[in-house]
Length: 365
Image (cartoon, one colour):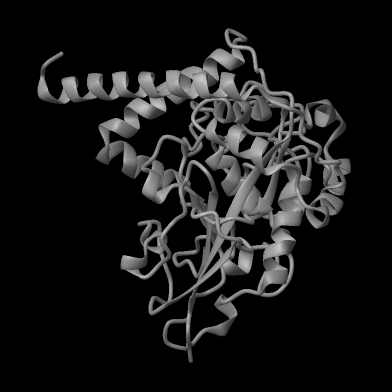
């Protein structure tokens, strides 16, 4: 007999990010305008009309909100499980994960170090010391993609400021979901990433085949403006992920495919199913490409530029995370004045686009 409130474990990797994206596009002209600006900037980077100025490693302060039901103790994951996830992120985003050796020879030259690292926040929004882990008890047995987990009023946990912290909510998700993220440009009060507790980290409740910490890698890829590698066109082969060096493919791959897996006439090498932005098992995904790294950089120098200033203040990642990442973590100095000027300029652009969007709705343009 199934226990009341029991949620079956996912049998395949399901991501709700595009559901959230489409909902916001339908609900908000502001979000549409923001996304148009962000896409335009990414295209300028791809065409080298804008040249990246960031050379240093950016360290993102992370706050993990563990939202758990009092009668389901496994939802209240351990600190050890959380730290195991940070270690995975610091390997994956620096291309320091050992399984990059499995990348097919045809794509080894495309493996990219995104120069992004993660550490649990050591100061809360009020400047008080913290371990970066917030635990909130809820009466909700599971959550969906409606962002209820992101607010105390709806049974979740309120976020910390999204321009200073990467908010990650860990909870029980329903509907076969492993996680979802909000693309840059969305509402500040719901900005961040949500991950199923049994697909978070590599120990504790993390369950095969999603016990390699790659769900968070995938969702943070979305948070840094990466799309699914197949473009979410339901097998039509007509829409890509807006990254030039990832092959067009028909749909998301699952399980552990065998290379080459050909679709959309993309032979001889076929689908880049080992990319973090596909749907394969954790053990079968192990790379970002140079083009994806470039797109993430456009995001960090644009919509998420505030984190470059935060990173400069925070300093390098702590020793445990750095040892796991296998990198030195010494961030170079950045021009804070330039970043502030760029942020001010971007704010003016956003206000202008919002004004234009309002004009379209009211008929004044």
